[in-house]
Length: 457
Image 1: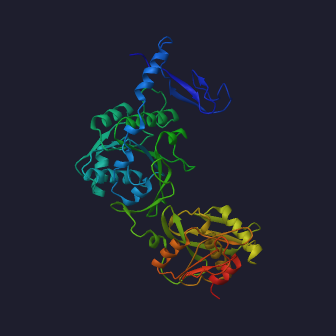
Image 2 (image 1 turned 30 degrees about the vertical axis):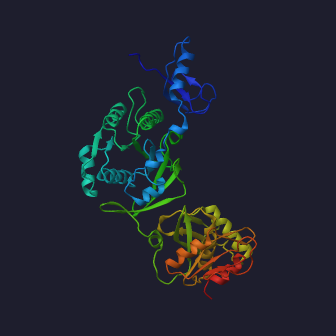
Image 3 (image 1 turned 45 degrees about the vertical axis):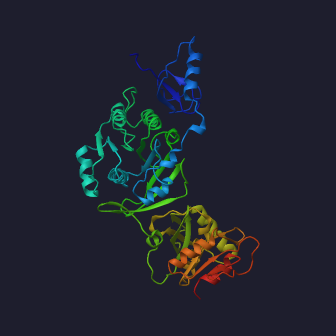
């Protein structure tokens, strides 16, 4: 058998080099050469004929094919199914990322156990732990079930052979950074090794009906360790987020070829593993007591799900020349813009105050409809006047101080009513400048009017 040849390709310009160098000889970029297996070339005489035969073998009329999405595999977790778009798609490859210790292995072992308990064959490839260690965690979470098989190896070829021999409905690989291909000289976790592992796993998944779930570690920047091409090789990239010392875990999709990337799954870490949160809105509300100054509630839309979220703000006179602005769960630039709007259009000057804004429960909010709640929480803290009881806010604040209505305001109002709130303050819809006739919906034209209708006198 001929020896496998490797080469080094530049990830920026694509130039090839016979050996590694710190700088690409073609484009002069630094640290861009990655070890790659050199594909063997067919003899020049038969190259065109070989391509023609290979091309004819892969051409299939689309009418003869059946959709893989029609036979999704339920994960056993409603929150995971929500983020995946309905469950695992046979023949797909999914990358699960998250900080160390966040619960990636625990979640995937729970998913593997529930799918095995439903009568499907599952293979758990562990490259970081011994089978005995995995068995101990399975006992803790109640995952010792028939149909769940373990394979402990760090060799890529051995792991692929195990998947092909078992042909499971789901194969979990924990983790993609610890498997190595003997054909590459780089160490485990290097860019070349990680990319080769993901590419070979994708080939096996596409060739059969097995869904492969890869566990990926996250760097300090919050991205999956390895090249960006790793995310292009998989069908979905799912992140498990949360504070290690907290109990809340959020599941988000950064990429999903089979569903929306706007959905969020809410889980809670317990002693026996991760559990679904039945009522996410009540879970994120800190308490049902009388509102205090600096606190406002908004109804955020995460995909198709409305979530009640508490925005907390604190303003205090600055002791230094340059006031401090710190945020958690909200873009700090958005808060700075709202501080300027409050100063210009509501007469609230925060230039001499330190400002801290936090989203309770560890959730991150990106939609503009949270602007009104953030601005109201800031005004409430500065004036030391709490928000009126039973009030939620949702609306976008413009630089002119005008308000725009939140999308799907009626749906937000229904969720607020279910949680015991009796009115939703928002901006006017397009062409509307008068109060809405719908019960419980309060329309304010600008930020000054919204604060007058919201804060206690």
